[in-house]
Length: 570
Image (cartoon, rainbow, N blue to C red; front, side, top):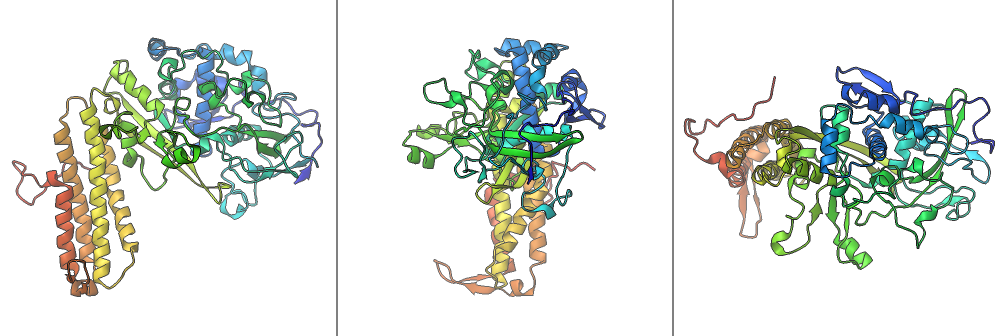
């Protein structure tokens, strides 16, 4: 903590114009790295493979910033036809440079009255400033030993500070923060927990194309798909008055509720922040809470996450139907959550006449519409990337950042090709069931040897998912229009049977002498003798029950030989 003059940045510190200064790290199509300005990113979007920020959540936050700029500069797209024109255009972002020129002053990181994504004059009662680990997510606050930047960054460049400024509004932690002058919520110099910043609640979902140009357009959901044809009130942060230390005035009762649309939401000022700079860079920060935003039933506004029905919230709020964002699960690969992407929005619970238990991300619904309306060819290969932060200790720290992606043809998301999409969802269920069976074998072998621990079960399950991971991605990415869902499912079950059987054989062979001798176990139907041989027999019986298609006769294949339908590339 250091004292800081109220006047803000010292005289002589130049402005840092984000529209013209390089600050956005990218990976180009040839694999090389570059750092570009906002103007440069849009101008070279066709040459860029993807954003390449410091951590995955930073890329997600920066992409949403770029989307807010694109939506506002293009004032849309309003509908499917407008989007199709952009997709076919040689210069879809031609209006962006003039737009950035118009709002250039609000993109100055060091502007004296309205610094980018900051609150000018933000101060504590004692004019304290704080270490940069409060905004840098790869430096654990309180655990400086767990970072390559030990003992912590004393100064960072303006470019890096700009990236972390965007990130902190998206993913900042909760917990008690510093109280600032003129914030009515502060008590005794403290700002009490208000929850994590908005994107920290999300299991983020991004549709990726082969270039950043395609990625931006694929996620540029048209207003009529969002139920927001009239977006005149939808403005990003830089077209609104500069923030003040207290709660946002237009969140008070009686005024139009916010967010007013995706431009507002993607630039939501979850925090109040002031960077402290000198001539060489940023050396300290003042940070506190900003605009609150409730998670409940925000699915119409937020397209970049899935949603789950929460009966606990319905009971707590006495509301008939409440959906909450689906969180990221670092223990599950993206393909294991395929049902949340492929299953139609109305399908879950429909047979019982109940509301859906989950809703697909709006961006996935948008991709399905593009496919259904034949705007995108069915064979278009897209990558659905998931990203999110996992918080710990009352959400006051980030424990883990999870990221994964799964590639598939866009036809799997469409209603017209629902049988193919359902085959993919069912294939995930096949894998889950087979891996559970492998885990049960490990547990049975442990019990046969006299142990009651489930540690071996978890290890076996991890091995099962590990061996199926790459195979499923290959199988899924190869699905194309005109294939037979039943044949696809059979091929996959045979692959699963082969791989899980191989792992099961290894577990039995390594079981040890005690497991082969076995012991008597008390069961509800009477005593059972359990040893490695009987555990193996149970395993094969369960596997056949869970993968029936893998045991169907296949003409031309000798009994017991087993097909080899999905190969791992060398």
